[in-house]
Length: 160
Image (cartoon, rainbow, N blue to C red; front, top):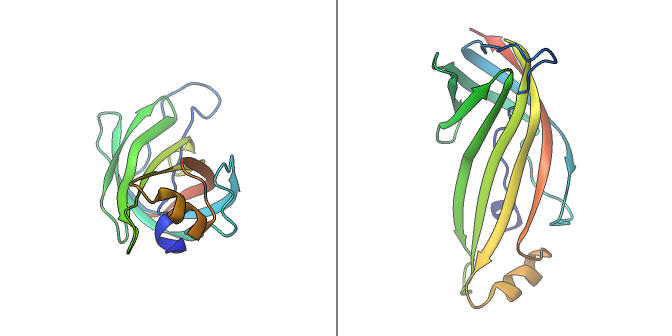
């Protein structure tokens, strides 16, 4: 259950590269590498993350992009200058077996491109719980709801 509640997916990011000029990311297969967990209000002893992997980035040509992780649903991002935001990276409802409790996860991704082929940023995961037994679920996993944490990452183009 620990893995299901705090599962992380893909991390990508973007900002203006320092000069405010728009950066058009290159469509293709990108690789990513996760960094440290920070801003951790969950204090989960061992959050599961996705330390490395690949995804497909499609630059839609209208200051938006679509990210397609290897084994997850695609999601949309908006680009402003060199920065980007993906406010609805993922949403999940995870019923806790045998309890009247459902954990809701919302994931957003933020970042910036330093070039058309390189990005960095962070992913924010927020967890809430609904139901009459959220206190029991909270005690079982060692997390007080609501809570959230962030994970840094870097990403770069692998192939076009």
